[in-house]
Image 1 (tube, rainbow, N blue to C red):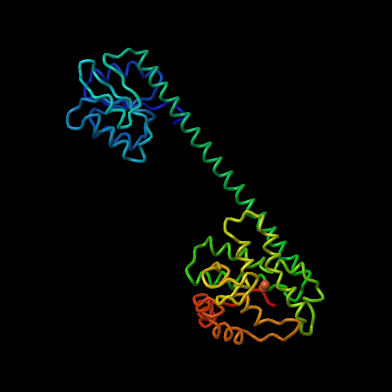
Image 2: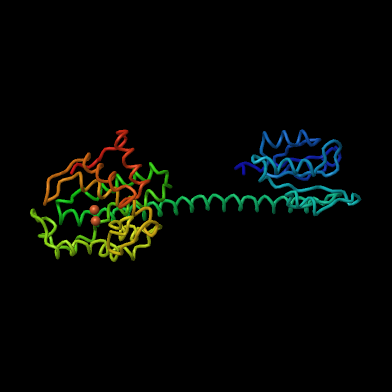
Length: 343
Ligand SMILES: [Fe+2]
Ligand SMILES: [Fe+2]
């Protein structure tokens, strides 16, 4: 609404009616006058009046038509329309309200009634606009708070990932690199952005459970005994137990739990196979083994990326999801992927 006096558009083909309304309203409002429907639409589009007083019975284009067109145009749709009808005219009031009018004024006019109705509807419109702007502010605040919470969650996730890496320097960066490759595979497979984000979270936390395993085992230079290997195998379950209480929008804890499952059922901890394993976990498995094989480990030198890719290619469709392997091979062969974090 204008900060100056509100602008009232009077639409009537009868000069006497116009004069009467002008005399009634000119002290309080700025006035616009249109003597037919076409001119009214033009005026409304150009000057955006605060309210329209609209005669129903007019030649060529009647008030109903004018109202319909005002409401159809987003620029003028919110302008309140009050219909003017003569007592003698049989008009369909319901139709007027259905078209979006807010009120009726009956001729002959009572000056006080005309003023009161206009004032009421201008006040209502002002309140509606205030409410709308308050809603915009509230929505912005909600969006800001949501982003803040998301940032905090992301920071917590990074901290948890760092805990593992500080304790176990040989896998430092492993989780970030697995997350990066797993996300690239998921994007290559055309998965949704939400899925890619959840895979990223699962990726940087997937070995969190290793905090339960003694550092002496994790960083042992020589080969491990059977019992020690069995101990390492508890880490997906431990990761799951830590993450299961966090209300992630996607089943991140399950993805982490399943990252050592294999398509042929030879994995752990549950020995799941095929579709029993979440697609996200199957992608993580491919990224995990590719990264781990290519990188240095305490008990062996780095095999390099070519050896890692040869390994997943050989076990494609057997241990590893065929689509995820194809996507991973395509990323490296086209040189569209390189690890950001150096081992
Ligand atoms: Fe793992
Ligand atoms: Fe891993």
